[in-house]
Image (cartoon, rainbow, N blue to C red):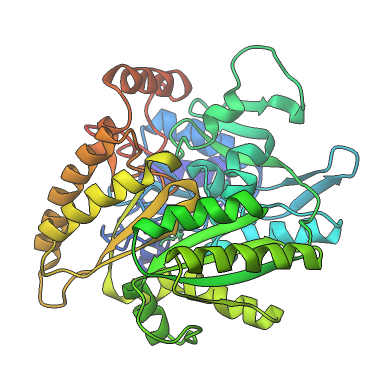
Length: 462
Ligand code: MLT
Ligand code: ZN
């Protein structure tokens, strides 16, 4: 161990520190698998005081820190490739309390999203943010990226569900943000500033989450669509008549991958686009309404086939067709774009994007899917086996630059829900103005004067 790490061990004799090659690799990377992990060590604090002491030590020794949760991120936000100390919050993974009057759950940052769901259910409530990585991602990481997922259409992003936060700022100070107050008009809301800050302003060490009532019983439908223009028409028709919990889309290319990965086909024939939708169905009237909308969409030529789940198992099987996509694509090392536009701007943007991708990736397989009801599209570009990694990335980065310009024209965002991290930092300027980025940098300096928190992420020339 080098000198600064010896000093850290001296100051915190109880701190768990890892430095084996296997640990450095495991904790130094996220799901992007693009950068070679190279942290100097991994610290696994067990208390807020230990996190504060690590941050103070890092300031003194000018050591960069990478806050780390489940490392399921898709933008390189938790990658440690330059000798940083990884600060893994995985040991701080407990539920600390439930407040029945406030209907809040206080948790440590390393708790998995799925464990939060389970803890809320124990009290007859739900924590509604949800997505496929629920078993491995951590709530701290969710907060750092303002994670979205499959229920945003009903419940919004992580941001909506944070009642209060405890955060260790870049100078080691412990901040208690918003005190879980429902009403608090007392100046700047630093709690919300922390949400989506990607570990560059502070390390979340405790979160108080809002909970809510479980939704009414629901039904799940899979729809096959003949063309892309039908997508938003079907969405408008379903949203007008039903209370939607989810409205997700994917292409036939995505379906092919997910079927090859073990999912069961639910609709016969070839159809270019699919939608999985879930809606409140507390009574027969709601189901009848859904069947009416479905019939109307078929009559209009917007839907060519469909199936409504008859059991929970069938509903899960339909959801698997959408939720299994990421895992089915992982062996192809996809380059991921995660973009959004206003819902009303989706049709125009989809056309522009389809033309761009067809022109720029003539020989490369591109898979589209996403939370189309939120205006959020995931574009996954699959690396051809024969193509060298570097050539593939160069080509994808070239196209992403063009995509960023298209997004700018349509008033969209280069990152809807995965964050900027390392992957998207060259394109931040397509979503944020120069004046905004300058202010963001200024804010960063206030919270982290020595730039020790996750340097190199978010900002292009950092
Ligand atoms: C999803 O919607 O499935 C997630 O954002 C993961 C992904 O985009 O791969
Ligand atoms: Zn997503």
